[in-house]
Length: 352
Length: 148
Image (cartoon, rainbow over all chains, first blue to last red; front, side, top):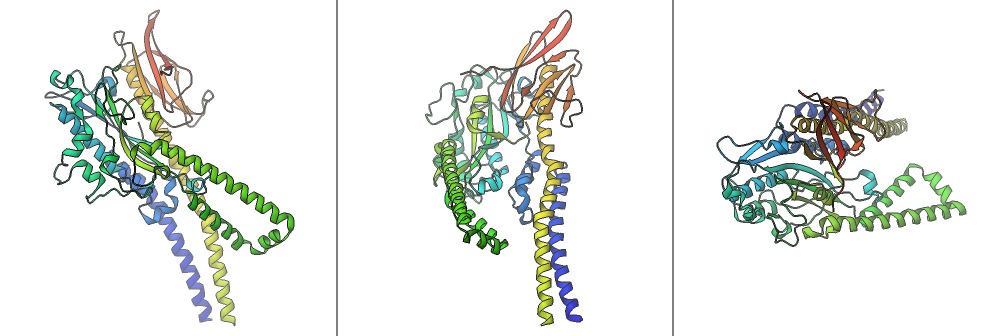
């Protein structure tokens, strides 16, 4: 009698604990939504990134479904006591002003946004845009997903001529390599790439990032960087504007895809051993299983190699420590125009 | 012997409970969560675009009669003009009046009629043109032709 009671308690307890854990996870997601509204936009984004990346163990299972809550910040590079709001670009939207009186300060403003974006999006350590189980089995096509962290407009009305005529001197890459972050001992690039508490070991890529890996284009009328993907200043525009874009693309490698296949086959066998043996022991069943299996593996292999090519197209210029065909995470400074955005992003997940 | 059988029963119960949780409860919870919030992000993106488009229209004058705007909204959503407001909804066909995804933002201090057929808000660029015809303000929204 007492033994039976003990058994009852153990099973009930386990089920209750499991249910409680799941309930807690769901509750956490709902609470996080309420919490979002009470903090700054950047913090809200960071929180959603942590949830999406499954940093909290309890949300790992459902993290792919967590929406990102990242709103594009509007930065107006202006000058003067009050400065402008870059109304031509942002109308009456909430704008952060970056007051500058030299081109160096424009570089600083853009560098700060790059650093914030990198930090906010998990420093490239968090895999944010996986394609779910389709991706795990090499069925989906690789897609480059982006979050536009900031749009930075130059307020040509208020910027002094001494700055406007020297926009070609703005060199974000050099600035990040030669200047330290406020209150820190390392340069922007060191912080982002190596030797810093943050480090940049990209979890989903596994490669260590070198300083040369980042191609921060300069704002110039004629760019001298041959590897710069887009001309940063749009001469046809009255008010030049750049965007700081976090881009991530992920491809599951073929060995992982095949391992997942083997696990799936094992699960199938374990869940219905008798049926599986019965099917495989009949001649037609075995032949059909072999043909289907080979066709599936063939398609997965073709698709995965296709995805490698796509990822290399997006990440090849980044020269990562590891093969770029597996994907990459990167912060890019691009000219804010459709062509540049389309070059790097298949999907944009930020709130404009 | 009896004890062993009891244990087996308990194990079976646990396995059934675990399977039920994994196969039924978790997907159900995820679906509920998705229906509440995943669509919510898309509509938030679309509404933000509407705000920005109406902001641009509100700022237009005869001395500043045209403007362009890059749309970085969710895939499958369209933008169009409806009376004195700009609207968006999910879908490619004309949005039904009872479409739950439909959102509109009226122009502020403007009497302009907004004309614009269904334009995708997914990685697209639009042109806004402001004119006055027969004393009536008109704003036309068109897709900007691709440039090479």
